[in-house]
Image 1 (tube, one colour):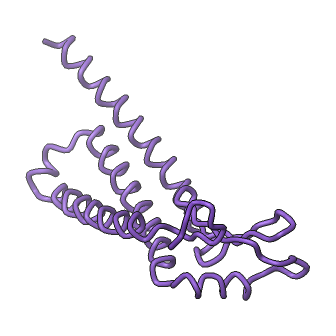
Image 2: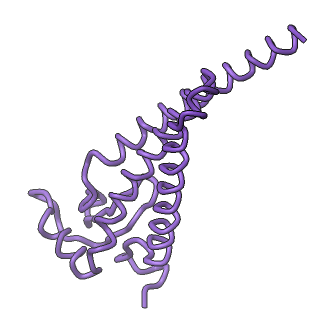
Length: 160
């Protein structure tokens, strides 16, 4: 049984599994919605703000899918295998390992050494920076969509 004071804690399996299930359902739902936006009727009614909204949703969906890909790397590694991977990837000159922890934000599995240094393993290095950039892009697209929608509403009110 792992306790809160146990220094060898990876990611909580229940939380990791819940994130994977909910995330996969969300990515699937986003994919279905975005595919529906390519129908003939949807294309005729396409407003600029809707295009930016859809780009924002697509970008957020890709970020989520990439995050889930990182979670899968952790899911298939048993606790013992995680400790062995810490030993295998221990940098030259790093003293004895004293712990292991799993963080969800940013997604990482961290090996802790007795000198206070730590290093990440298992999760590919490109995951967190790419997710961060994609989420910033999704936010920028969402803000653009909101501004365009507000502008359209204001213009429509002035005409009416």
